[in-house]
Length: 317
Length: 291
Image (cartoon, rainbow over all chains, first blue to last red):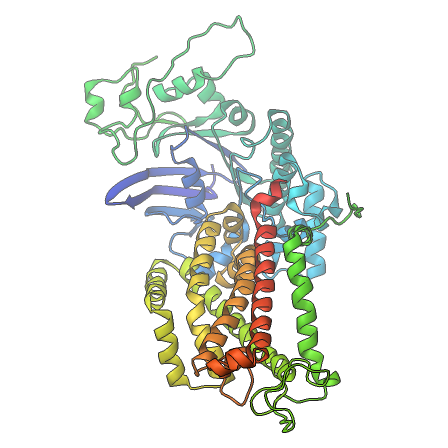
C-alpha cells in the first residue's frame, strides 16, 4: 500500500464527569488507504462515533495523532482546520436531526460552499442542484424544507450535503441504521456507487455486520474503546481470530433455517468506561479468557498479512 | 385546507403565523393594539389640541364634545396628553425591549458558544444582575441617570436582559449538540455563522415571545418609574406621570377622567400585548407541529 490518506496513531479520548475519569477511546491506531472503504463495527457505547468525530476534529481528541494526507490535523489552528475541512466530510446517522428545520434544502446544500467562500450564490445553487441529482433527487427540491421529505430522502440530502464540498474522505456514521429496512439497501447502493464513481475514501461506521461485509474492504472491530481486530473483510468473515469478533459474527441472522448454528451468546453488558476491566477489556465476557488475560493488556499484533488482533491466545482455531 | 402551490410550501415561520391567526385571544389583542397605535400616531393630524396647550376657560372640565377626555388642573386636554403619553410610553417600551433583546441574545450566545470560561464568567454576571432587587436597582439607576426618555430607556434595558440571556443560553447549549450544527462546524463554520445562521433562526420563538411580553412589562415599568417621579418628567406626558399627577384624593374623587383615561389606555395596551404574546408563544410551541 502506498502512503495512507488517513493515519491515526494512539488516539484516545477521556471525559471527566464528577471526578470519575471515563475512558472512551484508548490507543486507537489504524490507517486508511486512498480509495479504501474501512468499516468500523462494535456495540453501542464502544466509541465508534467518537472515533469518527475525533478524526474530523468535531470532537477534540485527548491525545494521539491524526494525519490526513501527510498533514497532522490535531495541531492545526482553527483557520487552518477550516481550510482543510472541505476535503473531509461527515454523514450523520439520524436524518431527522441532521437537517436544520429552519432552512430550505437549497440553503442547507449551499451552506458549506458559502462558509468556504466558494462561487457566487448562483453557482452555489447550481452545485446544490447537481448534488441533488447525484443522489437521485429532483433539482427543484432546493425550494422545499426538510420536513417535506421522508427519512430515506432526507438521508440522501445529508449525503448530497457532504458531497457539495467535493471531499476526498467521508466518515459515514451509521448512515442507514435510522432508516426502514426497505430503503436501507437503496441508500447503501447509492453510497457504494458514489464511492466508486468519485473514488472516495470512506470510514463506514455501523453495527450491522451484513452491511459492512457488503460495502467495506477492511473492517475494524471495536470493543469498549479499544481495537480488537483489524482484517480485510473477506478474511474477517471467513476466519475471525478474536473471540469477540466470533461472537459478533455468530449473531448475524441467517436466511437459511437449516444452516448449522453455532451461536455464541455474549453474557452481560459492555462494562462501564468509568471502570474498565484490567488487562484485556473483553475478558469479563470472553468464553476463552484465561487468568493471564486480567494481567496483560494485549497488543494489536499482525498475525497473518494485513490481519491484526488484540488477544493473547493463539491456540483458538 | 388552504390551496398551496406545490413547488413552494410554507416554512416553519409561515406555519407558526397561521397558527397564530387561529388564536382568538391573540387576534383580539391585535384588534386592540393596532387601532390604538394608529390613533396614537395620527392624532396630531386630526385633533386640534396639543398636549401642552392650556385652555384657561376649561380647567378640570369633564369630557365634552370639545375635550373628549376632559381637561386637567391647568386646562390641558387629556385626550391629547393620553395620545402623546402613549407615544412616549410605546417609544420607551419598544426601544428598551430592542436593546435588552440584543444584550440578552448576545450575552446568552457568547455564554453558550464561546467556551467554558466565557460561560462561567457571563453566567455569574447574569446571576449578579438577577439578584439585584429590581425596584431599588431602578431607583438608584434612575437617580444617577436622571429623568427623561433616554435615561428611562437605559434603566429599563439594563434591568430586563438577564432572563432572556438565560433562555437563549439554554436554547443554544441544546442546539450546539444538534447534528445540523455539527455538520456546519464540519464544513468550517465559525462563531458568527453558527450564531446568525443557526442560533438566531432557532431562537426566534424565544425572542418574539420575550419581546412582546417585555413591551408590556416595560410600559408598566415606565409607568411605575414616572409615577415615582423618576421616569418621564413633566411637562412631557406619559401614562405613568399622568397617573402620578392625578393621585391626590380630590382628583381621584372629583375629576375621575384625569386618571381613568390614561389608566384605561395603560391597562388596554398591556392586556392586548399580553394576549398577543401568549398567542405567539403557543404558535411557536414545537409541540403544536405535531397537530
